[in-house]
Image (cartoon, rainbow, N blue to C red; front, side, top):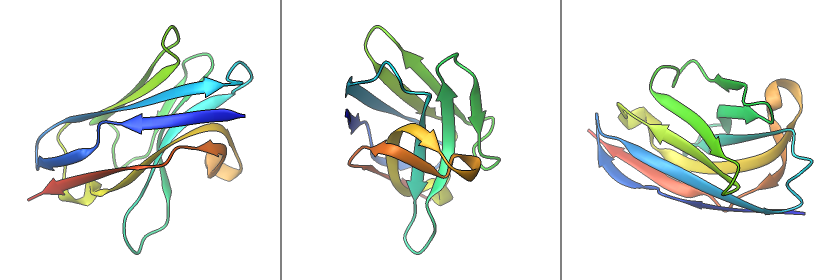
Length: 120
């Protein structure tokens, strides 16, 4: 089992920045990749950014160049630095571990989610 605890969400004006953190605990040694997903009201959940065990990263086109995913192995923590935020980035953001499925659409473990609201 893997436990994930997110923090760092909140309300920010368009153009601002936020950093989300995801602290992992439990059986994390076998995790292939971790990622950040988001789900806005009335929309499907989407993978925003992912980082593999060898630090390969990938991003959705909608956040490429604005968001950066990183990890601190000593702290078992994954971060999502979000810059140049737009109102359309408003969503509940979920940290996830052990990604699988077509386009890593699924994950074995999920955090509780943290709300990010970007005002115009």
